[in-house]
Length: 142
Image (tube, rainbow, N blue to C red; front, side, top):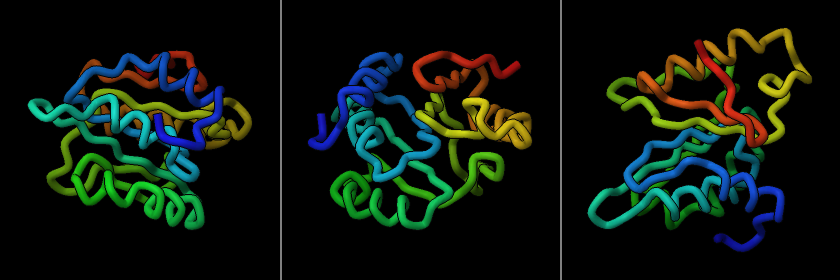
């Protein structure tokens, strides 16, 4: 596990259904500690995985990029500034197997005005059968 991971984030990462080779989307990555932990778990030499860490905050994205420089350089991780409700796959970008979020207001009920749009954006970024986990609980997308 990367240093600086709180016990709460350790529990979240431990509970995620991760397997090598997965493409994982983190929504609201903050400084990126959980994304780095997930990248370490889905990456194997034979079956490389990938994590895209996203956040609406420019400060969080800068911190995540700085903290994950090695993972980004190795192609195991990317970081993008975007609000979840505005998330779209970029040209040629493969969909994700799993998305997760911890304390993201638009997904946990604190900001309900954009909840439906956020769920639709996540669903569109996931492969068929992809899963969304918010605060440790799986959220149905359909």
